[in-house]
Amino acid sequence: MKSISVENVAKAYKYYPTKWRRLLEKIQPGSTPRHQKKWVLKNINFEVQAGGSIGIVGVNGAGKSTLLKLLTGTTQPTEGKIEVHGRIAALLELGMGFHLDFSGRQNVYMSGLMQGLSRETLTAMMPEIENFADIGEYIDRPIRIYSSGMQMRLAFAVATANRPDVLIVDEALSVGDSRFQAKCYARIDDFKTQGTTLLLVSHSVEDIVKHCDQAIFLKDGHIAMHGVARDVTNRYLDELFGKPDSDRQTMTSLSTSDSITSLLIEMDAGSEDVFHVRPGYRPEEYRWGQGGAKILDYLITADGVEYPSSITSNQTVDFIIKVQFYYDYDNVVPGLLLKTLNGIFLYGTNSFLSSGGKEYISVSKGDIKGFKFTFSVNLNQADYLLSFGISAGNSQIDLTPLDRRYDAIILHVSKGMEFSGIVDLNSTFSIYE
Image 1 (tube, rainbow, N blue to C red):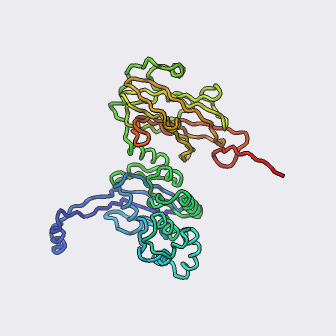
Image 2 (image 1 turned 45 degrees about the vertical axis):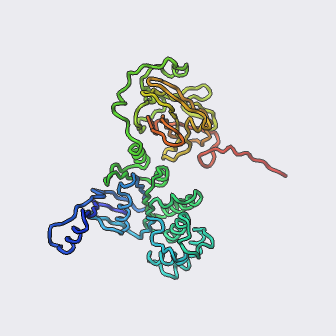
Image 3 (image 1 turned 30 degrees about the vertical axis):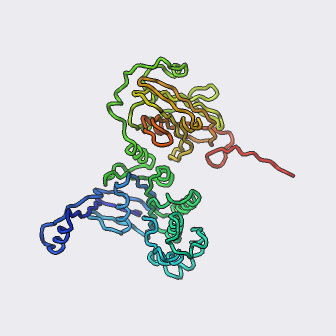
């Protein structure tokens, strides 16, 4: 059963060059229109089944908030048709609908009544709302003295006090602390298992991947991509940080540095990109960056075995990449990232973090260098995705991605006795009598 259906939807706002043209159009309704149309959304089509989940990503101004307002009925489409089945609960603008001079308790009643709940029902729900919001005595104080986090706590508690058929969340959870965010997402996951449809807007690609089956990437008011959440968020990151420069991509004939280490020689001396022929490589990798460097090769070793078919949990492993540089850089930062197969970030590091902020790496045009990360793979038995990257700039301020190979390698981890969860914290156990 369809929960949300959006067909050929477009939204335009009227723009008047002067206030006098607006006035003339009002007093002469049959005359030539005095306005111009600014299209915020155009040709939007998608469906979500009941109990499904979809994320919306895009830069500011892409049309995300306008789309949510259309879905909630706050505004109407200029063209097309929208159908939303069931009761909607929406957290759009933080505190929207709250009266700043009224207490939290009074606002709970007002918000609940606007949702169609009776006063008796709200009175019965109040203890649960207070407990979930966890703002203590502030529940009886004016909203105007609340912090943004406290407003979000109360707004979420009210919106989800009675399970909705469709839950729409627009960045509201980003102002909460980690503990409360986890509490909110636990409730969201519980609602999803009961059939609630989730529509989540967030700049956090990790949240989108973790909580949504599908995702939409909005760009300039159009759907640039609609598909599996992990693939769409990779495309979004690509657009956010810039695609490889086509001119830089063609620079493959530069000379090799004389300081190639024996490790690089073992991997394969020269400037040929052989990354894709190594064991474990995924042709479905997502490669992006602004150019200026190229990751040519990688090597994984564990206990002297190169490219092991399986890594034993808690085994110490070397992860090595070979990179060629096409320009001089004052500082470059290699890094890696481990994810689950459904895209949840497990561990990410780079040269700056792993060296305790001490490692600064300058390179010259034509250099080929090797970079190694070593750590114990303390994971449960499963397959994982490994990504490598090379960036330039200051790790503490801003980094420019030069070449990033996302989800490029499958890493299989085995464990004789499995445990619950993903990460092995190596617990010990004792009995005292």
